[in-house]
Image 1 (cartoon, rainbow, N blue to C red):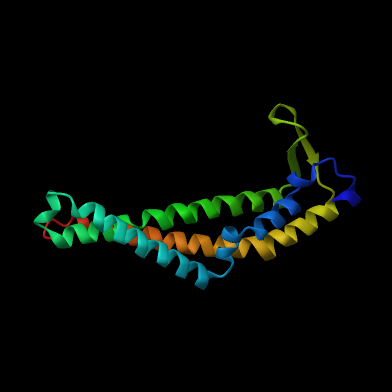
Image 2 (cartoon, rainbow, N blue to C red):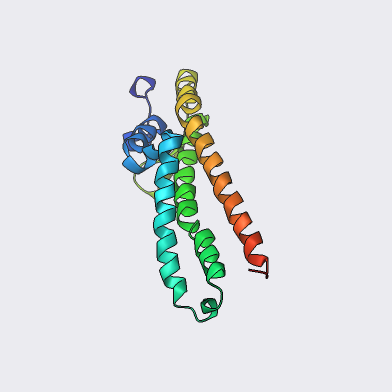
Length: 164
């Protein structure tokens, strides 16, 4: 961005924010859908065992073992869901900054915000980064979030069944 005589501080430039986020170990997980799904599956199983232990102390569930196992199974989706939401919000923020025509930045603090309009060449470069690098990650995260939501809805429907 220096070749464009950019007034935006280096750490607030969208390209540099993308590079920093790409270096983060946790934020690189969704780049591979298969690897990220495996990581979320491990989180889900770990959370399931914790939820089983917690719900096993309930007097209500002493009479219905299947009910409390199902409740633990589907409520343990909360950790992978929240984790995926956090990753989605981070990548979506970078996507919006890369595709925006303007860059909002702060020179020294929250009280002195400025707006810089990107030159066309920089907009094209950052738009290319957004479409080739960030958009596939967002697509993976949306697909995984959709699967988690479907599982959670199935769990709600099963739990509402009084025959269990």
